[in-house]
View 1 (cartoon, rainbow, N blue to C red):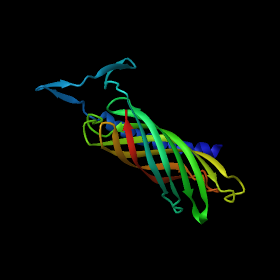
View 2 (tube, one colour; view 1 turned 60 degrees about the horizontal axis):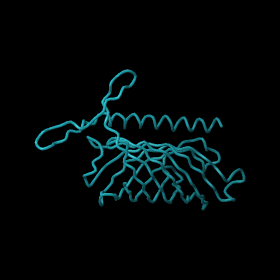
View 3 (cartoon, one colour; view 1 turned 45 degrees about the horizontal axis):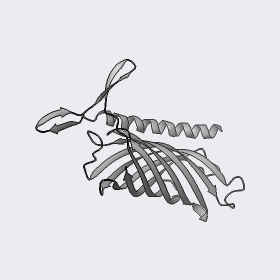
View 4 (cartoon, helix red, strand yellow; view 1 turned 90 degrees about the vertical axis):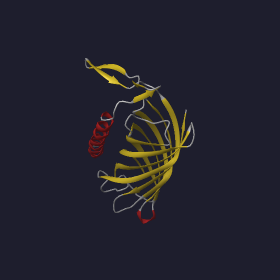
Length: 223
């Protein structure tokens, strides 16, 4: 239990550092200015009160979406364990700048010495547009950043270890997504990222945190 708490603490610290970096980028974005019939008008922003201080915030405009993609993962250590599967997602943009996403994953995993495992998991992400002025629905290309925390369940082959064959872990990750607009509702996307997770597969060092690279390629439907 103590080892698991240590692993989770390391992941939370890493995610916090990335989150602060992305948050600084979003706050540095310029206010959208729209051109209307030759006159310049500021976009319709709203004022909210935070701890007694008035803060200007972008208007709320929920934009829901669902997505499906392949899910490829490669461990960045001396094992080079590989994972391949699918990911289903759904979420919403709260405004032009930020939103949330829920994920569900199912994968096959190939380990050293010919062992295999099956994994299922999920996660929740905070997402932010990387464009000044926020998400650009009228443009062909958009770039977004994601940071999230997830859960993973591993089912190893019966001959992998006499100690256990079922493991659960928490993991943290961040990614950058490029989307290409195909029409009013459809987008294609590629999303590379970095995942931080305990070495669940290592019976002697399962508390150690290691990095793995992942790539999701798929399609988005926007409602």
